[in-house]
Length: 417
Image (cartoon, rainbow, N blue to C red; front, side, top):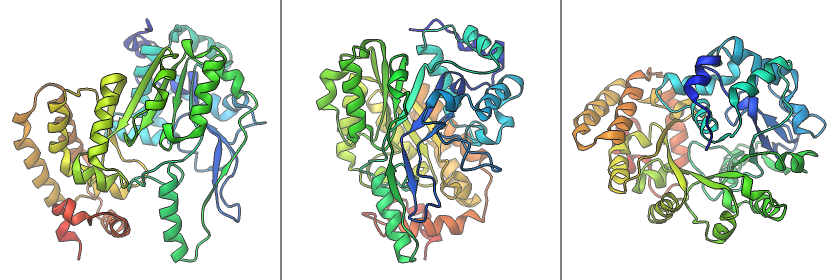
């Protein structure tokens, strides 16, 4: 366990610093493209999974340089980003809008979660290392933590997801595009960066992203490589999961690693999660998530949308019943029209009153979670122009869902003809 203290780090560099671009990188080894090549087909290295490219250069600044990760993270854009975190604030940087919006909306931002995780698990002196990077003209010589996104292979087509993160979602999107005689998206796999294996020899944390991680053959290949090279014992791995599978075939391999940590995506129970995370079956998710939570270091990540928020009481009753107290509240960031800002005021006020009336059921972290949801609803400014987009989106989703939204969340019935 690290001896870093996050409060001391914030005291030294300011509470709005993001540690990720100093110690980590998000590496995607595939591209999403159209047949006319209007979308990039190369691998990318970005400062984090929710980084937004600058509007004046949206395509090219994150492409991997000379097929080399270390060269890429020392580009002028990366250096400027690190310098900005020291001299200004994450909230002054347009590329960081997702985290800024999450923090303003009362959610757990990736910046905050990564900072906490690095302070707890990076066994280096973070303050000393950052000062060395500053004195080295903001250049970094090594990566301590690597987020690896090898494939979008996934068995779910969540309503708040995109084809770039899910193969089944991509099929759904292509089916919609095809009806409009649009050119279809496809995935272009790429060779790994030239320095990928060298980075694996020095990295201390590997975060597997996706897609559903344990369904990706590349994840299994990297795990096998780390074990074969006798590197696993010094490395912590983290995995994202939709809890559709339990990692039975990996259990013995996991024992070779220093630590294994899971983030489990659950946004509700029963019909709510089956609607929001299409392809899920609640009985399977419940069994697998409880096994994972009990047998590994794990947190539950709850994505708060205009759909899932109406099932939050049932969700909290379930986590309370099962003594699950490690919870993350995430705000949807791909689509504004699925956010809390789409809920009309009269509907939102009725929901807030209902949630307040249920507070007495909970205490401790569960009550804190519920209060954060209530506060997030209160902070969400209604944007009426989003409602038609929401209705259009839901009408598309209903064509592939077990039940229409109005049967799952009847509160929405008055807004659908």
